[in-house]
Image (cartoon, rainbow, N blue to C red; front, side):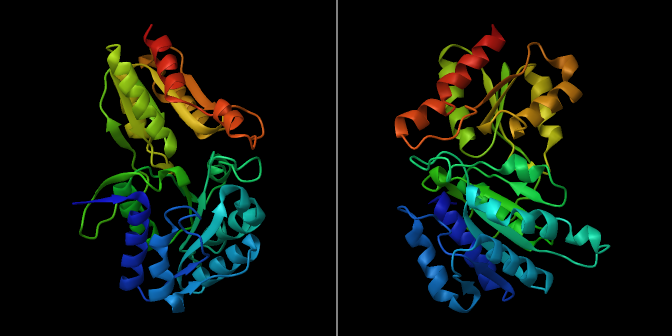
Length: 323
């Protein structure tokens, strides 16, 4: 095991697959954003220049190129920048990549990953702060991934690249500096499997992406008051690991969902509905949902912070459920 950052783990996965599969290509620069981690990706562009395309900014055209190449037999990784920019390619992602396999009777495969960054980023304002995972999850034919730690992102990304279906990969720039142990050997983590990041017995906190870090911090706060919180990282929005989630809810009898999207029609709302449908008999209290305020994201950092979920909010919700 080697301790690496999330950004380094992403590069490890891409480098390993570029070396292993000469048919794997990358489209789009800025894979690691434009902050303090982008230098980790420079070697990719240098060492695999013949399979690294840096097109002009046009998300619709970029997505179309990646989809066409995937249909023609390549394996593709297409970076679209922020989740907000993916709306420029929404038609291509939904009406072309998502339905091609089904509408062709299984004859057309679309092995492509569409990579983007979601969420509150510090001054991103309304045009750069969208969390579109639930929007994509509401369309059949697309897998939607949201890992949280370096080990998970490397293993899941390798598995996604080897797959034959389109994957929406929703990362968070705030995770790029997160450190964790990563196996030195090549490995894959099957898509669609949640992970219990912390065992507990009094309340289940179910989250994804950066919200998992808030949830773990909330669990530390709760532990000081003698409340044992279980934190479940769903990792995959589609497919959703219902078994792991419901097992945790049945174990604790209480559920708090945490989502960086707004609450309406969110991933957190889907998990709350799952609890009502499949674990209602074991619930000891109503489900609590923590989400971003339902307002356009302000540019002002203090105002952005004010609308964001926080560990203290999560802990307070859990305390209300425990009573």
